[in-house]
Image (tube, rainbow, N blue to C red; front, side, top):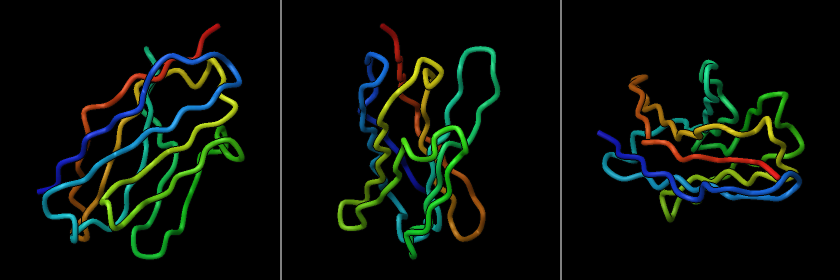
Length: 117
């Protein structure tokens, strides 16, 4: 089992930055990939970014390329999402996800990000 806890959400103005954190605990050695997903009201949940733990390789949604950066600190068992140049359309509940090597998925509880003037 893996437990994930997000933090760092909040209310910011357009153009500002925010950094989300996802702390992992439990059977963390089994984690193969981690990612951030977001879901806006009335819309489906979409993947924002993903990182492979062993290699650090990253994948981003087109809508956030060049603005968001996903990273991980293996020593702290924590994943981050640095979000710059935020736009109102980035407003959503952001959730942390992890998949272990068997393909089992785990989710955090989510954190609200609101971009509004």
